[in-house]
Amino acid sequence: MTTASQQTHQSSSGSLQPKGWLKYFSFSLDHKVIGLQYLVCGFIFYLIGGSLASAIRIELSSPMSDFMARDTYNQVLTLHGTIMIFLWIVPVVNGAFGNYLIPFYVGARDMAFPRLNAVAFWLIPPAGLMLITSYFITGAAESGWTAYPPLSITTPAAGQIIWILSVLLLGGSSIFGGINFIATILKLRRPGLKLMQLPMYCWAMLGTSILVVLSTPVLAGTLILLSFDIVAHTGFFNPTLGGNVIVYQHLFWFYSHPAVYIMVLPAFGLVSEILPVHCRKPLFGYSTMVYSIMAIVFLGLIVWAHHMFTSGTPPWMRLFFTIATSFIAVPTGIKFFNWVATLWGGRISLNSAVLFSCGFIANFVLGGITGVALAQVPFDIHVHDTYFVVAHFHYIVYGGSVFVIFSSIYHWYPKFTGRMLNEDLGRLHFLLTFLGFNLCFAPQHWLGLNGMPRRVAEYDPQFTFINQLSSIGALIMALSTLPFLWNVIQSAFKGAIAGDNPWEALTPEWLTTSPPPVENWTGMAPLVKEPYGYGIKEESIQIQSPDISDPENNKQ
Image (cartoon, rainbow, N blue to C red; front, side, top):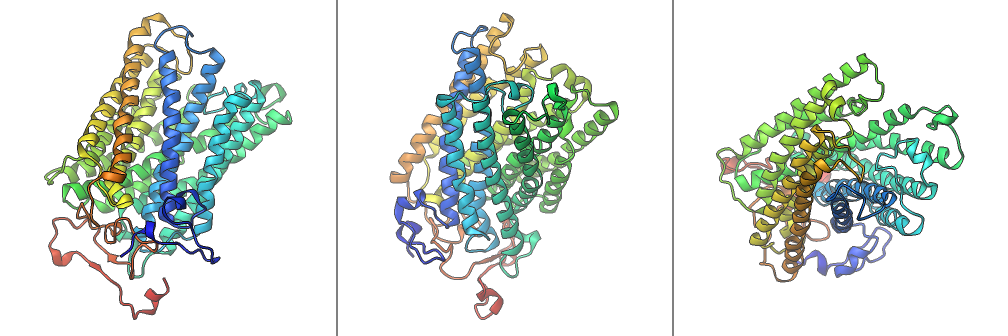
């Protein structure tokens, strides 16, 4: 069987797609190529965003603005947050792994709308380049990734407008991807495959895509109105013209709190795929995991105003959003106990994928605990706009999503390339990342509790030592990237040959060659009714080829 790199992919228009490495620089319609395009492009932006984070921590190593000017610091801070959310985490946990895995999991040859899929990816590079080059040409936006008015209206207009255009392109990419995932999961399932037999990542992506389609248009409309205020001097959010800045906050957080779940729900699904394979146990509580995902989707849409407890919200609103935010800890807690139960008693392989998954569980639990604390109005008022919120947020999105991204790369790299990553380098990568991350962000809880404000370059000298500890942690995190990069590049050429299924996994992507052929399978797609059947009697695991004589199967 020839590999994907040895084949050509013919589009429906009849044109041949480039072969070899060139296909990754083309407008490919192959979902696997698009998935890897998302992954590599996202990682490049991660390196840029991480470099900006290092600049921030260098500045904060001393209490005065002695590394960069205040305006420059605001621009760097804005670019860092925007790049890490919109150009790294969201595209990778959704677009990269979603595109690569979902067609395999539903037994399809490709996504429902291949051309829309390619368009969704190719909106990202120009949006990212536009955002980054604005720093050198016009000066980047200075109002943070939240772009709150009146600050976003009164700062230099050119950089803010470029920021808005970039985020609109990235939001359009997310919407196109969300529509595609919903259609693929619900309409392209292989005949005989029921919804409750799908791998958990399908459910995570279905829930995520629902959030994307419902909430992202609200952000797009909000930013368009903000651009009118900046360019046409309208008064939607400009208080000097009768606008209401609180309305902007409501609209912005209606998207931006679900955006947290847009980043972490796919990570939940990926961890749920990785742990059973390396524990040789079925995923514990499949049905409760599905229902908890749907509960998070519902509750995630009605908790946005807990970001606004200091914005003059009335008592009844504070009470409602406190209760709703506290309730969302229940389905999240269900997942935590299901992962622990999956690990419990399993034949665990402590490889890099499992280490990063366990690191995710530990970090996310701490982030979840501080999240419940922030849901309580008195405590939130005390630590609002302090480094406690910075620490909480990074424990959720970095300790959560980014740890899972690395875990997923170690798990699926053999499928992508046909070669294994070096486990010694992988363990070193985990050790440096875990230690650096916790040294960087754990002390920031103390800073916030003692009143250090976020998003400012200058602070009270009493906080100097803790900030220096945090900066050392950030340096270790930056250094952790080096063994990972060397591992990925070196293994692509000299890594051990993986074989088709080095983990002896049961999910459909491992039931074909590594890397897979262009059409995913040489014959019909296998029917996998028990994707987590580890330790179950062999006769109860249903992995079978379809009846080729069945006309329903021949439609694919």
